[in-house]
Amino acid sequence: MKGRFIVFEGIDGSGKTTQAKLLAEYLEGQGKKAVLTAEPTKLPTGKALREALGGKVKKSECEMAVLFVQDRIAHNIVPEDGIEALVNAGVDVICDRYYYSTLAYQGQSTDYAWVKSMNLSCPEIRKPDLCIYIDLLPEQSLERISKGRDSVEIYENVETLTKVRDKFLSVIDDLSATDNIKVINGYRTPEEVAAEIQKTVNAL
Ligand code: TMP
Image (cartoon, rainbow, N blue to C red; front, top):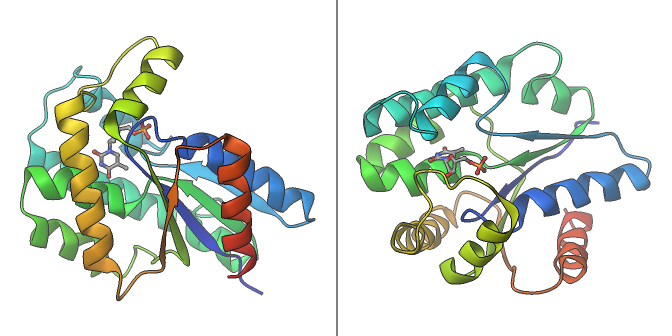
């Protein structure tokens, strides 16, 4: 039996990374094999993205969109621990961010239809079985970010996050007919959020 491919999305500080970890632990506790992964990846394509996100290397918005797609393809097809290989081996793959992020960030800064087509029409980019969008207001997320991190990346300020959240909500609306997306209220305790996610995953 194939594994499931579950993606977590949300604006920065929404709690998606914590919830992705909690879900992996929960599935393992049920005796399932689960692997936690993230984008940008730890592959060379992902490292190049991190440098650009940190402001170390300057890239145009279109270059960023293409780099995210390139990193996503590598993430899917890399042998043994790529998404495709793991899912085919019966492992549940849980991914922190995926193409919904590219549509929300780069779809906003470049051309939405172009970014959507590169991601959704690519034969080497798998469609998730479930996307969990953890919804939080930008002010709430920035409060969490400022408590937990030393450096603030280029995309993080209220004005930008508000635009990104609005864009995420419109991406969800746009993809609601083709993708299985569940919006979860993130303004609760981690345990409450985790319980709702577990219920949703158990119903898959
Ligand atoms: P992270 O904070 O989840 O590690 O993500 C790093 C940054 O990368 C975050 O600010 C959002 C941005 N990003 C995009 O702009 N497009 C994408 O496709 C992905 C996966 C991330």
